[in-house]
Structure formats: structure tokens, C-alpha cells
Length: 359
Ligand code: NAD
Image 1 (cartoon, rainbow, N blue to C red):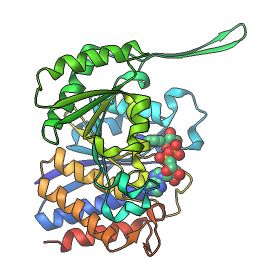
Image 2 (image 1 turned 90 degrees about the vertical axis):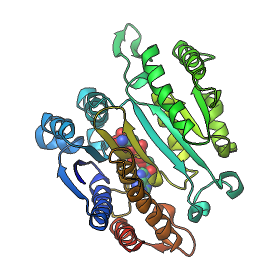
Image 3 (image 1 turned 135 degrees about the vertical axis):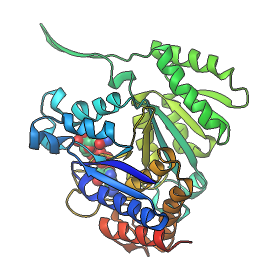
Image 4 (image 1 turned 60 degrees about the vertical axis):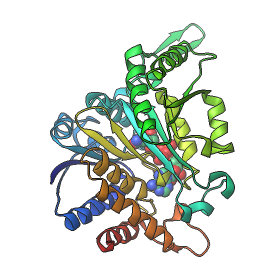
């Protein structure tokens, strides 16, 4: 199989973690005879510095013409005070998702047994956690109209949270279909006691649920969900929720798996899907070779699964990660007593070796 992949390292640790995911994909390619062709392009602050815009037309074209996109992370303090359209997140990642029609962000929250002690949560609470959070990605609070105005006494700032029935139905249908292939449990998370958009969300999801009698549908307020995720995460199978809620809940849920550096994501819905770790550019550790590349390598596994239908190859990557963790190799964020501390590149090397060695 020949696959064209747009590689967008971006900012901060992006340039350190993306090469490790490429290494894993190349190991898969060598093992199974697939050809992965990577073309690198600029995005985020790196693009802004080089060509004056955070999402160059050339990058967008490359993404559209590729079979999948592998992204590192964007943003950092250097660009924080720029006008909003130039800021890496608002000026590159959000429009890229919108342009590619990526309305669904899938974030698996899985705990690897080897990392049980890396979590700040109790072992008996988190053991066996396997949740898939489906976050709506091109609507909601992040995409609604924003404005700022001067008033006689100061300023007024407005963000709007807009959803249409079509947008909710689209993401909910994906969630029901996904739940059907898992444990058939779907929890829809909203704030219907306060927000009108959430009331429409709840009505629409409930209505659609009639088409899926085999899927057990529950509704939960987002504040309760935040609490339930740390109280008893095993109660969840698939969670579907609004853009901002999903962003916040998955950062919180990442601690179940030990670190933000373990949380992969797939953004799907359009012709070309995008794969990236759930974390940001981690400016506090950038350039120090401390970043955990596993979230990005797991995102590459999701690419094999969702974009190329290469299930065995995806599992090879996931199993290689389990074996490397079982052997005790740890980056600093998941380091435990008795672990073998490795840097970003060494972790990538160990995983690539395991991919090649495993039967
Ligand atoms: P962050 O996710 O970058 O970092 C939060 C904490 O987690 C930091 O202490 C960081 O060191 C740690 N961390 C994150 N990834 C790690 C990894 N792979 N290995 C080890 N430790 C890791 O969030 P932040 O600090 O709030 O944001 C930093 C920048 O990233 C901001 O400019 C923000 O806008 C941007 N951001 C980008 C994305 C994206 O590209 N999708 C997502 C979130 C934040």
C-alpha cells in the first residue's frame, strides 16, 4: 500500500515527537511492505515566523492532497499576545479542522497496566479503564461568533455557543455507531440545566437514540461528568460531547492513563483525517528531549486503523508500546521507581525496534 502523509510538526515539542511517530510508521512499512511517503509543511507559530501566516495556503493544499495528516502541536508564549487571527490555535488548527471538515475528534482514554502507578489516582479506581471520548470539533463555543467592545465602564467580551440539529445529529450518529462496535453504552454530556444549546443537544441525541435501541443511552451534566471521571471512570464506554467540554474533560481524563503524553487523537469526518496527540506544544519542556512521544505514536496507530484500514499494523504499534512499557522504559512524565529513564528519541527507537521484532 502507498500512503501519502502530510507531516506538520508545528511548535514546541512538535518537532521532537513527530519524527518518533514517523519512525514507528516506517518500521510498520518495512515490516509489511507499505510505502509511507511523508511531506513536511509549516503550521502554527513556526509558519507565522517563516512566512507571516499561521496556516499557509501551501500547507492547506498539501493536507487536502494527502491521504492523512500527522500533526505535532502548535502554539507557545511567543505568539500569545498577537491578534486572534494570527494566534496559532485560532489562526491555524481551528481553520485547518474546519477546512478539512473534521467534525469529530476521537480520544481513547486507555490505561496501560504498566502505568497504573504513574497515575495520581488509586489503582482500584482506574484499573481496566477504556473510554472513547468523541468531541464535536467544528462547532460549539470555539467556533461561535466572538466580539469585544468598549463600554463606558470597561469592556465587554462575548463568545457564542451555537449548534444546529444537523451538527448534533452528525456527531451523535457517529457516537451511536461507535458505541455499537464497543460495549454499547453511550453517555451524552451537556449542560442542559443551563444552556439552550445543550437542551437542543439532549433532545436531538434522545430522538436519534430511538434508532439505536441496542445502545444504552444516558445523559450527564458536564460538571457531574468531571467528577464521575475521577470517582469511577469504568462506568463509561463512549462519551459524546460539545467541543469545549470535550477539550477539558479529556485533559482531565488523561491523568487516568498517567500523563497527557499518553493521550492520542483522531480527527475524522472529511476526506482526509488528521492525527495528533491531545496535548499542546509543552513549551516548558520543549528542546529538552523530555517529551513523551507515545501519544503521537498512538495517533499514528489510529491513522493506520481509521485512514488506511490496517488493523493488524495498528495493533502492532499498540502492542509494541505495551512491551516497551512492560520492559520498564519511561520518559520523565511517567517515570516511576525502578523505571529506566529514556529521552524522546530513545523511547521512539525502543518502540520501532519492538514493532520490527514482534511476530
Ligand atoms: P500542554 O498540553 O502543552 O502542556 C500541559 C502540561 O503537560 C505541561 O506541563 C507539559 O510539559 C505537559 N505535557 C504535554 N505534553 C507532554 C508530553 N508529550 N510529554 C510530557 N509532558 C507533556 O498545554 P499548555 O501548557 O496549556 O499549552 C502550551 C501551548 O500549547 C499553548 O500555546 C496552547 O495554546 C498550545 N496547545 C496546543 C494544542 C494543539 O496543538 N492541539 C493543544 C493544547 C494546547
